[in-house]
Length: 213
Image (cartoon, rainbow, N blue to C red):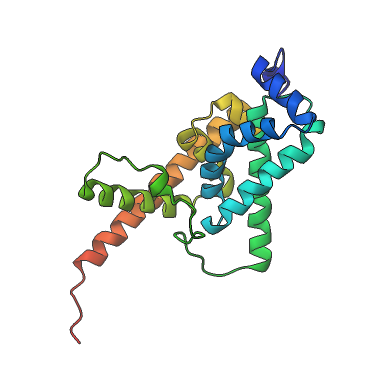
């Protein structure tokens, strides 16, 4: 980890934003939310057990950033620091969930007015058929991803969905680059297996004769 942060310097825009946040600037906080709210929401959405919790977790992330900005020591970029808070908040919720809300959850449920994953990825030029097909594919990946081991899922989402670099993921999770690459490879393989099982199950389901009442 020391090699990653050696010689690290914050970009000028980060330094200015941090300075204004520490002064309690509402404009700076609005800029921060504008920059990171959507990617953090998309990230959290894929980490929590119930996507309906994603808006609340996202809000808590930014509240924590605002309250803790004075403790930020610039040992990583502002971006990776925010993602680290998001990881911690999502995992804290998962731990709470397994202690207090065990049971079946809906992967499609979400508060009224909050966007679904399909809505966030929608292409306005696609046909109705393409939209239905894409939604089915997204649903299949989302459900398979939810079954992947937590540490692997987090790394895969960061790399393949959020587009973070290996170095950024290492900073956020506070692990070595080798461990990052290992988790991503193993997570991708586990996701591939889960998707393959789901495809087989759906094929078998389609071959079953319809019941006659």
